[in-house]
Amino acid sequence: MTGAAPEARLVLDCAAQLGESPLWDAQEEALWFVDINGRAIHRYHPQSGAHAVAAVGEDIGCIGLTRGRALVAGMRSGVFLLARDGSVLRKLADNPEDRAWSRFNDGRVDPAGRFLVGTIDEERGGRAGLYRLDRSGLTKLLDGLMTSNGLAFSADGRTLFHADTPRFTVTRYAYDPATGALSDGEVFCRLDRDSTDRARPDGAALDVDGCYWTALYEGSRIQRWSPDGALLAEIPIPARCPTMVAFGGRDLKTLYVTTARAGRPEPELAQTPNAGGLFALDVDVPGRLEPLFDPDL
Image 1 (cartoon, rainbow, N blue to C red):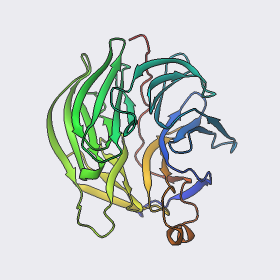
Image 2 (image 1 turned 45 degrees about the horizontal axis):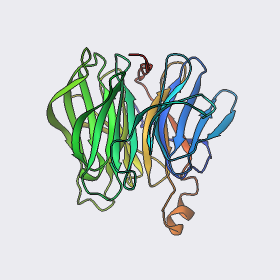
Image 3 (image 1 turned 180 degrees about the vertical axis):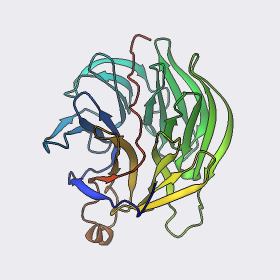
Image 4 (image 1 turned 135 degrees about the horizontal axis):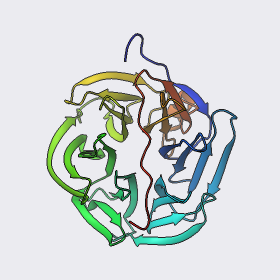
């Protein structure tokens, strides 16, 4: 980035309980995102200001766009193929963990069209995992996680970034786009768990320079990290809990940020009344369009 830091602006005051998984749809020129606790899928069209909400029947952690104009969704009970009105087309896989404490959380389509999706252990027991979904079903790639988060692929698809949010750590893995195999993990960056605000890495995206943008839950800011793990920028967000970032707009130079308001104390919400809203900022370096999920792969 050059010049002054961009300033985040509220673009949609939707009061999401737990906004997550923003995703730019280039064909519709719209941004999709979910409200996990609100059990809803949102669609926002920046040019017209149109905003539609589709209710779903259970907690919904993430979505991806698919070939065939549907959505792939990680929910509490499993991974589903959904119509764009939120109705279920078919269930693709069960959640292999105990739904009393586990639901699907962050997800991302890989360069070949598979869906990578992780879970959250809501009891903080370190039993969550990261999975790959293709026509053979779910394959576990990582286990022993607390909250699987922050998925992002390099431009060549050979590097996967992944955060375990309560451990304040982002790890970089070698990834084989041909097979979907994961290997050779190394720490990419680690936040200070002893910081006053306990800001920790949540959802993420990469720009075309290979820099990793991450939302800091409880940190009231987002960060940009260089490909070699150096902190390049911090930008404040007028909500205590930013949850995820996504590039959008025709030139992919608008960075959207979802936020949360669920469980936040009333004095905090009085100071940040737009918590749960969708924010945006203009950036110099664009992002990339996300691949489409292929349910027949």
